[in-house]
Amino acid sequence: CGHLLVSPLLCDHVPHVPTAATSSDEEDDSDSSTKPIRSDKKKNPASLFQTGGDPPKEKKSKKKLPLKGAESEEETPETLQKNSNKKGKAKKSKKKEERPPSPVIEVENLEEFVLQPAPQGVTVKCRVTRDKKGMDRGLYPTYYLHLDNDKKVFLLAGRKRKKSKTSNYLISIDPTDLSRGGENFIGKLRSNLMGTRFTVFDNGANPDRANADWSNVRQELSAVVYETNVLGFKGPRKMTVIIPGMNSDCERVPIRPRNDNDGLLMRWQNRNMDNVIELHNKAPVWNDETQSYVLNFHGRVTHASVKNFQIVHSSDPDYIVMQFGRVADDAFTMDYNYPLCALQAFAIALSSFDGKLACE
Image (cartoon, rainbow, N blue to C red; front, side):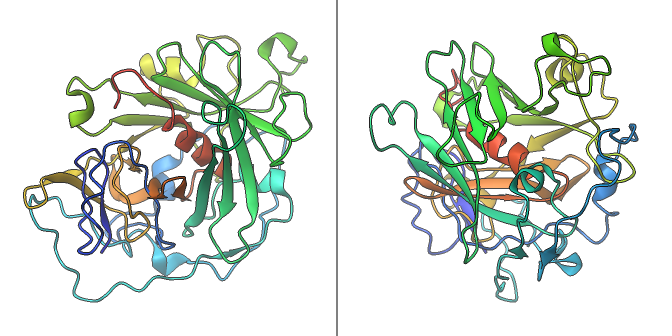
């Protein structure tokens, strides 16, 4: 059962994962198996994210992309072994957990796919690779997102913009075209000056260039807040993720701020939570035996790192909305479930690479 280090001292409960992976800055790679997580005593996880909201006017009926042979309903949250909340040894599971293959996902229209929420009951398993080769790639590496299956289908690429006062990542559906003006630009991740708060936008227009009905204005797809850690590198990170709620048709409620006081971060700060959902990273548990913080990544993460995290809703901590962790020096696994889409999950993962003040 793959518990893994998530912090400088975080350690996996996996018996044979080298616990030497206690170095604080390692990110984690993972094997390819995470099942959708939901517990059968709880209601359908979709209800956690429904906020009402008006259905988007732009697209009345969204065509669902075919998703075949997926880990479906029975693999709901409960199939993820539960993380032991007790200190000390992790409970051994009676049965050896078999790893299901990644679902076969047909990506017919890449732009549509990366913006579409994961189908309910299916964990979309992906891999993030970091390319630091070439001129100034050390400072501005490029990150690539692929489906973690046999075909290794490319989904997204992201790179930090140069000459930007704050961390600003451009995200593209073309691995070779990462320009702001290109037709493959699909979204961006922008931080505040401190590097502790991030906002994810789609590729819509700036509010200054809004058309009459405001339908062309960019949407905010998520925001991430890192709490500064007074313990410095000795404790795990704390993240809050804010996303738009879902309407009764399981479509994202559009959040199109008209000014800086109307975005996801300001709504969250002012506790104006209409059509907004708050998520958190799952707190790792201290293990006296290994002297480290541990989380169960079910074999998907193999290296200890402060960057390893799982995102959950406080009402159902067994349903993993997203998890991210290191599997090699420059390779990570990123798995996401409904209601996230690939763009939201990738941007949240990119925020974890940033050098935040007092967050290590």
